[in-house]
Image (cartoon, rainbow, N blue to C red; front, side, top):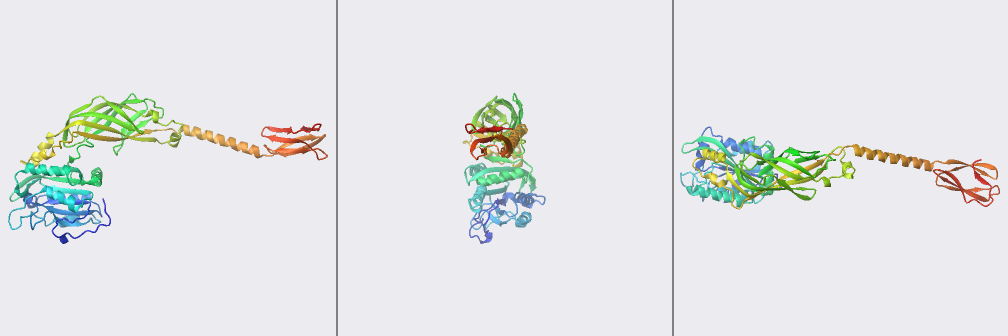
Length: 496
């Protein structure tokens, strides 16, 4: 996401503020409180290389970027503290970030040798409010999840406050987290892992994050699947077609972009199709303990219910799927006839009728999967962090939308027939025009004298006797000649 016309101020020139109040694309928050000591002290630590490669992967040349360290703000020691505020260089952000964090070490409290404490919520609020300036963007947070301001041991409460910020504050529209294994040993502490969060701010930030995930750029650095924190009420399940029954001429397939395609023969007249799906839980790391299902299709501007063989789902673990049978109405009555202008215009390709399938889960109850809890316990022993993944009580349902294209494949036969008919009509018209415009010879005998007259179809010519008196008229049509307006007693006839 590039922003034009924004002038970045030097971080050192900011009086009393740790981050420049500027709209940027990416904000990277790197924790350097006392709990992070082993990540900095261990010679084998991959902490800084991770930050460098992550920033290089998710940014593009020209993007605006802020890199800041954070712990807990105190008088004389603001937090977060900007280390870098610039546009990403033409050759990428790797060198810029490496230089900015090369000398970064755990912070100490002012006037004391004690290591600094941590406030995750303070850091995220500063990033969304100051660095992004309330504008859309992405905030990346690299932390060991020790959220204990003033060395507060009530970490469960602090984590809960942090979770409330994620769900209700800062205009955050989407949040993902990656728990990563990284065993390190310092002089004072040891740790098994850390967490990378990303907070999408605004609808544009969420779109940018979705694009990043789809591109695979994040997966090149972090191979673990992301855990979803928000939203938990959209795109929670996925429908994948398995088979279609009792619908000759109808088949379903999935496009690479996730679009469901229904290929329909122009002669298909079956109004209903039995479709077998796989219903997949896409809401890692949550198990859908129970939910009630309902579905409908919206095609051609008309809504139709989809009958489900099973209206409930239970104990569906993340990444797993269950078969789901359904009966779906097909819009055969709305499909253009093969002789229609739409069909003739689509001859040899496909006429596309866009729409969607909507699946609604009500009474939804989510629980954190056992595998994820065990992983978190191994990475953060003694930390009650998994509690922050408890879904908000006001989320008891979700909605999933599957875009669909009904594609009718019309052959070229009707088009060729219409073209042949049109060409025939043109030929007949041309022949008629030629016949109409071609002079025709007519033999007329007047008072025993034979005359030859030339006339075009559609014309009428006068005929005079030897004295110059009009005695008749010669009328010529496509079918021949005839005499009209004959004068009484006139000696006029056609032919010799």
